[in-house]
Length: 266
Image (cartoon, rainbow, N blue to C red; front, side, top):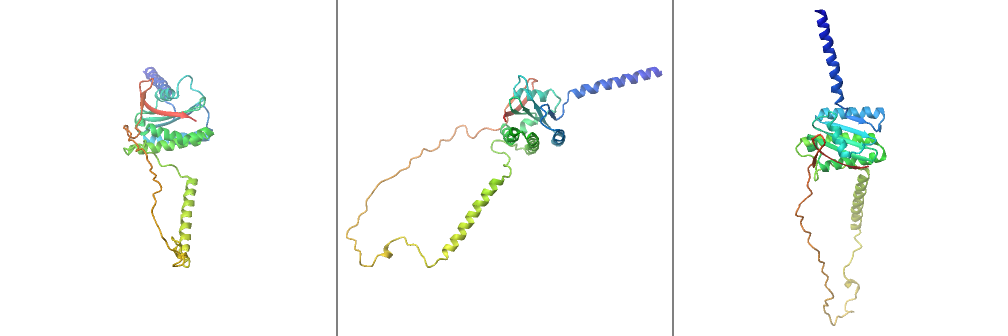
């Protein structure tokens, strides 16, 4: 009896030990830095942020870096990496490939709704400068923050799109220009007030004040038509297609899943 119980216990332990690796193999972390672009501290900080956002927004937010992606296109590689590595049905993945300096964002499930084509390009424009300059940690942190913002906005029922994108970040130089313009206007007002106080000086629109009365007699006057000038401008034609369309374009990956996405160079 004891032998049977011992054998049954060993069988259960063996089954459990075999099942754990199989489950783990199908799941990858939210940060996969195969190109080794981040140091240990940067990896830990970014992974913690990705995990927090993914849990809070109920979507996987992923970053993947590679030195090269073989013969695949960035779209194919990003889609397949997401599909075949156990990520959630709803999510977004940023791929950075160093070989050809490519960035690509792949979306799936609710990620297609939250990240429109225009939104993806907006995110790309926000991180491309840091990617190009080698500030990879800053680029990935900005990507994660933008993902959280875009998902929150999509939950309101009005995702960021062509005519509705986030406000540009605070610009020191822009604020400086505004301050200079306001200062210039204030100085004009101040000098205008001082000018009005000069009551002893007046401008004259006619020369009659400077002519002695009776010294000038007009014997003949006439009006002469000199010329005519007409500006002709074509009226702009209204476009039959209206404003540029928004939303997300989609395609089917090798796994048969539907994805959205977009990318570029850095």
